[in-house]
Length: 117
Image: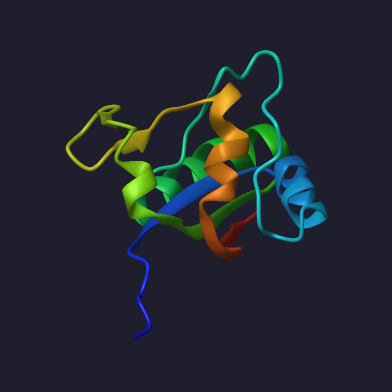
């Protein structure tokens, strides 16, 4: 019998520099955080990710991208869902020191689903 691993879809708004680093990691992992980035914030809905990529990343980086990826649902239970504003503004807060382990639980590849310039 083949068991199907339960996954959760997450989105990540990102700028061109971070996206380039994801590509260098074969679209299977997020790069280590910079010293001023103690938390990795994937988000739980596409609309929120689009808003950040379009309204923030484009203004600050000249381009914004929304990525989508799957993560092992059992593993994600360790991270409480944080409401960062309105009802649909939901994030997971992954401490930078846990990002390598988080990456190990990504199922499949990270894909770009929206691009804004």
